[in-house]
Length: 634
Image 1 (tube, helix red, strand yellow):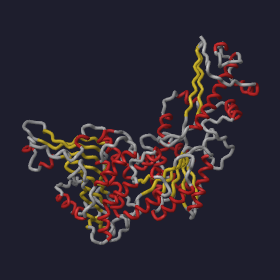
Image 2 (cartoon, rainbow, N blue to C red):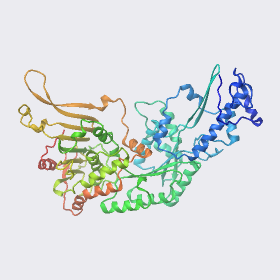
Image 3 (cartoon, rainbow, N blue to C red):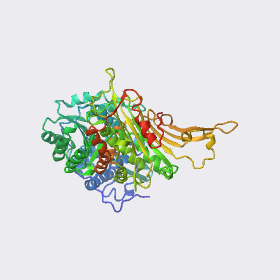
Image 4 (cartoon, rainbow, N blue to C red):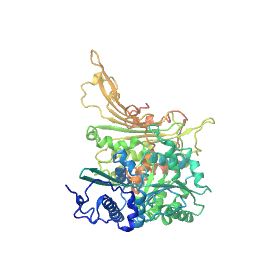
């Protein structure tokens, strides 16, 4: 029996490399003649070893040529490679190249997966193997701010700790299996990425200062805390600081130079998280576009809300951004859209046959969307002057309605979903001031509301919206959202029509509305899915009861729910933009709210005062009665 490679020309080792052969075993009890083509012009076990070593070098060189032509794909592609199940002993065997192999690679100038020669010294001391720079650079602009310290860096570390940020490096594994006259040679290349995080602000800090600043905010998953300390140290070593000064042009040029230095000339992608005040955002974005974008990969820009103050300012803001970036580069983030409830809307609807046929005015009577925050919920740093309409209603509430009401997209691609969302937003009637209730919490000296309000800034908003299309004509979408209320509550309630000609009407009591079917999607205080049905109470006689089929997540799934920033940051890395507002969605949302904002600006609408820690204004009860809906507080 023989093993041959008749079509493969493999370089064999010449005399100049014979000094490396001493580490190859020459005691293999195999006939050299059995390996024509591998051991050509070589004899014995040493020749066989030289043949295999030459084969490895040849494959590395061929792979290098292929890699030069290959564009970096989405991170998910590489995660698939990373998560392959490998034997433990095989993985351990791949940790490093032998001394002789490393020498050979240097002599032949073969560097796996890159054409950059490893640097002998690096001022940033970033740990890269094989001369590769990181494949992903993340820059947090405004790194010393509260949002960056409390949310962004902890979310990045959580992704890193859970294995969703690129980390593991290249290894080369050669397995030689000998069994009598049968030899199997396996060369397995494991391709992985690397990540570096930059903090950028105007403060005079060092890398060590930034690491100390964010270290206290980093925590590991409750459900798996293995190697937490080691992971934290590794993450902090990948974090660097740059003082941008007060000239953003100079600062962004310095950031670009530092990134290029650590990338080492290899292909790399960049994410810029602009956690800066609204008044500085345009200048920072413009200077970034001109001085800090890479030309060797993609650039993605994350922008925090609010996205303008009104329709005109938003239009000007968008125009300025699109003069510097492409739409596909912009990710307008709203952390409330990163909740599992929002992501589950499309899953629940489009993957369950029981719901999709009912999802229209034929069966649905009304939809209620509730988002109330108690005293423990943090108010936004820009809330004063913007109010709850610009903060929560414009993005989170209207985006939730769009996801609930949209037609089935042709695919799960982000642009396909956004195309359907914008159709819904454009179909929503402009709000009539008579269908809106505004409120403002009346804080006493002992209350800590956390926001300095002027006399017209609303902290409570309730409204009835209608979508003028064939699916939802006549169905009211009822909104209630406010700050400083009795409890934190986030839920969507979908009420169905009464059963026509119900045979059990007389057994349902006087108020048949209380016995209608209802689908409740809850995010707070507990994440759950509930279906309200009518059921016979066990026993003699016929007595009906409204019962709930309850899926409580904390009982069903033994896993910690990731923070919304983790979810959204991972979406940015993966290029999934369906939870981020596109420019046309932004304009459509402003068009809905403009009449109300104009009334407030003209002092024609005075918010109704309500006590902190209470249920809010009483106006919504009358509003919903006007639209034939009974409001349910609990």
